[in-house]
Image 1: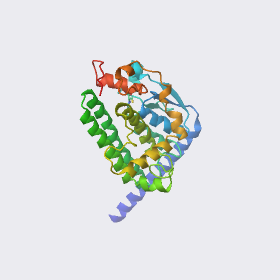
Image 2: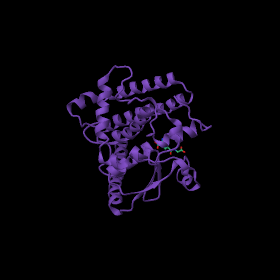
Image 3: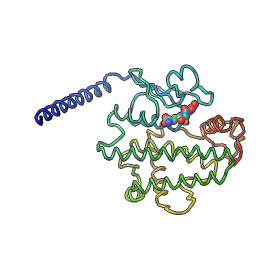
Image 4: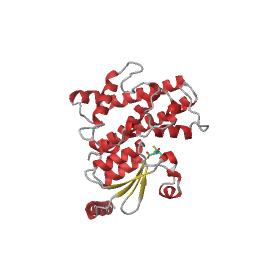
Length: 298
Ligand SMILES: N[C@@H](CCC(=O)N[C@@H](CS)C(=O)NCC(=O)O)C(=O)O
């Protein structure tokens, strides 16, 4: 019986090996066979779409850019609903015509498919990076709770969540030893010496959160420390943020606030007489949170 088990195990190993070889060969063929671009669906200020675009740029994947204008609800047209019934960007359609959506899933897909990928080889390191990306998603979700607090004119609640977000960011920074690593090398990335999936997942979303909070509260979430503790942890994140924003793949994928056309709603919002507000946020906030079209002042 023992021998039989061993033989079965060997057969299974052999099968796995063959599958692996086949997978590697197909992967190589797919990359070199054709230069036909993947189709990429985006909205200019969507941070989730910017994640995917940054990865496409970094991996030098040829892509065809398709803008879905969320301001005029193009995501709700029958053509786009066929592509993504969840009416969200980003979406990529590969050369085989298969559709991939959800930004983090798109990053995983691009990592699997295009060399040199976006993650290190070591399984433990990959697991760590994925864990912190998941943690960051829970921070990002709080951004929407703040918009809810603004809607309810609940300034205290808004500040409470803002403070919570700062604590979470400090926690993340110190858990990944960023303050120590930044001190040794100010150009370090979040999870090592190369710009990769962790940076790509966090950078655009954090960038947008900074814009939102600067506009609504007049506070830079990485610079204006609300409760004064753990300054180094936030400062390290700020140094990483300012450096990493300069990455060419990110620069090619993100937008300049100043170049967006001014939205008439911005005057209405008038949070800090600062009209350089991400117009998507206003539209989103208006549609989801202020059905009457009235955006209250904080
Ligand atoms: N969890 C999604 C979020 C994508 C998302 O929220 N996209 C927004 C733009 S930033 C969108 O397309 N909204 C249009 C709608 O919901 O109708 C992802 O990570 O891809």
